[in-house]
Length: 471
Image 1: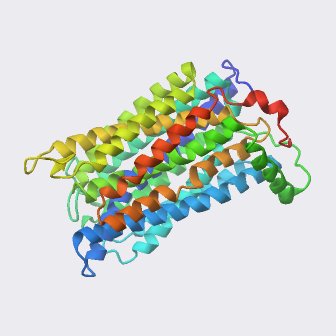
Image 2: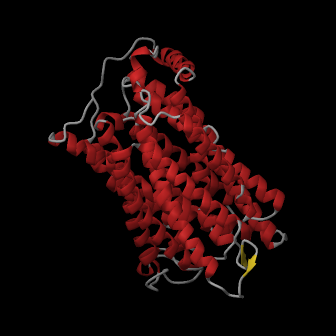
Image 3: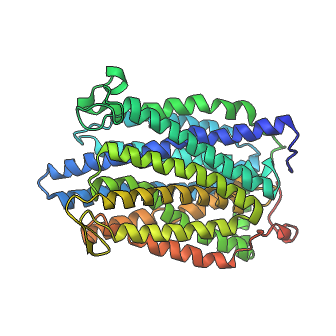
């Protein structure tokens, strides 16, 4: 379907679709990266130290534990997501799945509240977070499948970038509320910025209720801001195809076979498998790195979050405009180069030196450098996210978009265990949370090399030659 820019109903549908990013981004901004992730790492490290092991080993074990949780969740998303997408295309229904996973996302986000600071239920917390993460990623498959119906190639690139940027602004607003009014700076402390009692004294800072409130906050935010999506995004239910689930799996098998005959699509899926996996590793471990390697306080993490989120929002909006003008491929390549430089810097930096060059005791240069790295991760991560789904639209069969984005999720998650598990493995073997990041560099390089075989305009001209069955 080609968008009509003057159609009021379509405009509302586009805005409703973009509000999904606004509603869900706090889970990634607050949960994965800046609030819950670092809190989990510190709690886990202290829990392991209480068993008698040294601090460096405890920190390495905490990072390894977090990485395995992300990795196992990624494997499940990879293989279940493409099956769900194929089945949804066969039935013609996507919204019921969004509703279903919305409930799971809400419940398990809320349950992060129960992560106790003494580490007594640390495995419970990891499982709860992983289930919430899985539900969010499944929702994203079905929501992304609606993107091709919102406009033509140029419009889709801009819509994708604008939606991602709106999501980052949503994460930014949510983050400000958390660090100004809710999350405490340390056990028993006041809020990070204003120095108030958490939630005006309604939360107990001694038991880290301010930080733990990130779970209910994410859930309530999601409940409120998904209303425009549900109100404005509608789908027309086509006649259900014969064959049900078995036919859907047969069609999926055919689609997978056809991928090898579409070299541009095949190269893009494999390329994105590597560079998106590397990016997810940076997202999952950026805050953990700052907490474990640079010994940042919650206040420093707060400033880091503000800078990186604002940069992400602005850079993603700009990337969407470049995508509309030049296409998504050069946008992706540029941002991968930026992230490679960031990873090299992270691996080469400690509190005491940068690339082996000693620093004065107490130097704030590592803090400044990592602030800059955080901005680059946010900006380039957002740009890659928006441009990648725009590129996927250019490779999407018009009658099977959910299956296509299921494949997209599969490529992004099939090796989603790879970056976390490599980080965990290298961290374990080297007993160093900093050097544990080194495999990410190789994943970015492989992803960029494979992009050379991706057609900048996609392969939709080949649809007529495709044997993919229509619904």
